[in-house]
Length: 317
Picture 1 (cartoon, rainbow, N blue to C red):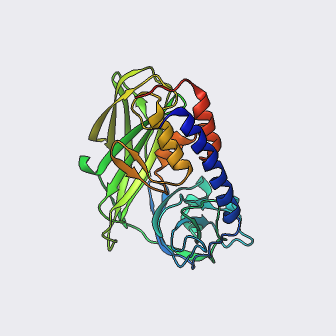
Picture 2 (tube, rainbow, N blue to C red):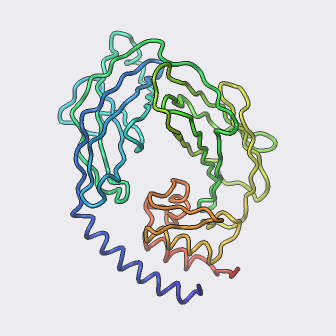
Picture 3 (tube, helix red, strand yellow):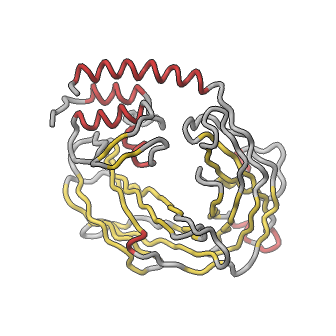
């Protein structure tokens, strides 16, 4: 694919994006059913197991994802500012909520749980919040956990010159939660973080449950670095990575070329993108969306592709 053909594809993708935008305005997601859940207090944090479902996307059917909100008492009308809100994920989640000091008294532990759904393909389409459900606070429901090195993976990306490390922990079932991801501390060879992880005692779903977190490592000089991950002070795994000198590097091969633009064009058009033999489909992983967001406006669209094309002279492979 040469430069001029890519320009033509850019215009075509722009028209497709416009049609998708018009269709998206007609799309709706049904409100999920009231969630069920229970919680416990660990390390001065509220940990909640929550389950919901029943939502349907009018154009993309069952391609929905959920988030949960927790409020101190019954709230009506409900707004996001009145909730401790979780991340968008599956229908069953473990929420970790850092409570203000006033809520850490035993007599004030009365919480309600809400659920919300959105389309996993068109993430601008969001349902209303569900009816609330009371959360039971149960003592002694968890234990400390240290993952094995085979459960932990790291993806380091260059985002407009800033280096971010995306850590993924693939837990063997749904009964795990990260209380604290830790803060990267600089060492002579790179960085080290110390996380706090717990496991629920009791019945859980036997499905692989990935938890992901982004560490901002700042602006780093080109070179080789180490990233050590620890849990409860115990070493788990050491990762080694290289930092290149280019500010736009979508496929993370330390150079900016037509291959990066091809991946970006695929993401803009919601098509499968191939990076070093690995196929990524919509909804794309967070690290890929972040690298494709060239203008930093929080979304990937045709403007990012145009900006990437005009950013610098493209080298051929």
